Length: 149
Length: 381
Image: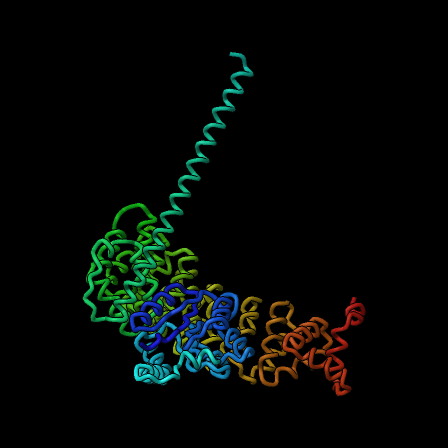
């Protein structure tokens, strides 16, 4: 059986975290939520996530600060940044720091889900291949590789 | 009974009543807290339910009339409506329409009391931004409660309901400053569509009213549509009310462009210091270096605000900085002060100090530094 893809959703707005958690869980992803930047940073440091959806403006640490701290610890977690600020500098800074995508709020849910699927497509294929290998008796799995990291 | 016993008895009665009131307050607060908590929990549940419907728009899972009537469900819909864009708004509009939520809020708004319930209904209709509520919101633009009028206007602005523009503008004459300022904010949301209704209102009313047309002029400044420039120039030339003139001068700095420059330069010669001060700022905002020599004369005006605004405008204009440096050697000490302050505010003082420290200071730098030293102030006194 394929392990679920793990996604962290970090936003101080309960509306966003509930909407994204529900939508993503309905599509079969395992979702953890964080309500502020500090919590998001700690979760990213202690648990393995395949993708993070991060709000730019949060109490404690901003989204940019969270990515920066992860980079300092050499944690390269794919991040999709969400922001209600329509500011070119924020977009550029986010992408320069390593965010894989930038989505403005209010967002179009199907579009965001499509971007998430696109980012995870390669991993989904890999996990499906691992699952097939396991069922055929092969050893290497994505989980083992995660543990090795 | 003796007097002392009566006094003690009275104090005990008062104490008992206070204790009873305090206990009631604590109990009511506890009940309210519990109700709020339950409402938040229900709202979170409804959020999940609605998220399900947004993820699968074709879902036929029923929501239930009792759920749809719950205020917590309405809160959840409003929150989600503000968080999403595109077809999800249509999905939410479908749910709102299916369960008659607009009609329910309209009935609450039409009820005579309590005010809190009516106000919540107005806010809900404004937040939902559904065009089916436009007629109700238009109806209650005349409500006796100012906050309800504000919310109705806000709702019409959110859905960009252009027939509301005239209705909102027409109310400028009769509204309080607070309500007018909120209406101004709403009209700004309509953008250029509100420009001509505002201009028409100002043209008709500026000879008879003051506050309404002045607020309408400022609305044009917030909207920022340069098409308003020529009309505002004409209004400034015709107006006799100082409040309207001042508002027109301010806004011409934003929307007037080069066409307004000549009129503003003429206004700079007004006997009223307020007109001169506002004209200086507006000329600076237009940014044409042709105006440098005119603003330089403002440095020697006998009013502080005119000097200050002229200096600030010069600091913004190409070439204006040199006029300020020239004013440092003026015979008028007030002109010197105004020029020095503007140069300092624009960062020239810091740059001059840096050049002085590196030995590359120019004569102008030294003149500015000399003016800004405490010794210079003492010499003046």
